[in-house]
Length: 360
Image (cartoon, rainbow, N blue to C red; front, side, top):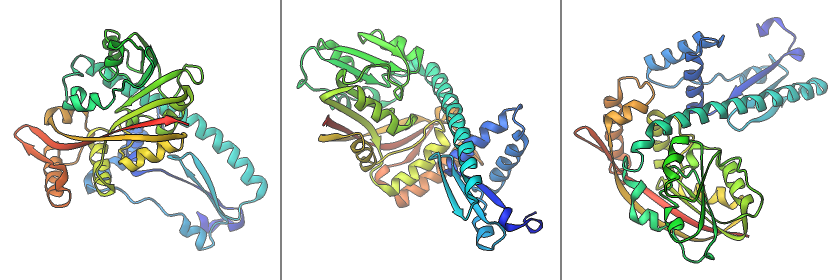
């Protein structure tokens, strides 16, 4: 087609995103019978499954280098950013930018709404068994890492992503005024038995005035949200010299992060990201917080393979084959994860960090 047009009049708009996000979008579109690209998405996913590998992205940059087009607009739908390459016509480049920015804004809203609905459904179904479903939720050391007597009593405490209220229950028992916010109604029903006040809502759009809370807790929810947006909101509603405590499972280093990202993408597709300690510190610093303490711990996780299978995406070869391959890989490259299959369970070591920071 490009051979039949004048290169000066040819512009390519090239959309890119992270590979795991691309796969999620393909799966979503393949299930939507009203989407005109539904069949195309099914065909691409089928090709991926048959090859048991990810498809390579096209590279229209070659067309620009070869002079077949005059310019190219790269649209990154992960970062919601635009970047021109080549020499686009000035008037046209401005108009296209405005149009695509509006489309990205609308798309991001739809994407966020869809993801939130899926997360709500997941945790509503999980609420009854949540507290006892895995080791970290009631782990004494992790819970104690969130507790401090250094704040005035009573103080206003906010638990973002409160779930069933386990992380902030101690503060309520000490006489503080504790508010828990979460997007899952059924999780909040459980939290209402532990906390003073519960609110249905998102941590990325907190319905509170500026400088309101003395202490904010964020335990194991950063991977489900736009992290920077949540931390910015937390910083906004935290009062001057207030304390923010973030507790999260982390990868020991960048190498294990890359492995864990791929593993979680396959077995827990609702998660947006995994983190190292350095990642969380970097994100927190952008919100203007000063670190005062970090507490490390680790524990052995034990998950039923059938439970993993229920939430996993459609994996070529099946979940058992996938886990066996992961076991072989980690034994050679990442022994610190202690990743192994034992009867009908997956066992691995999970690393945790709790960070205390002051608003400055």
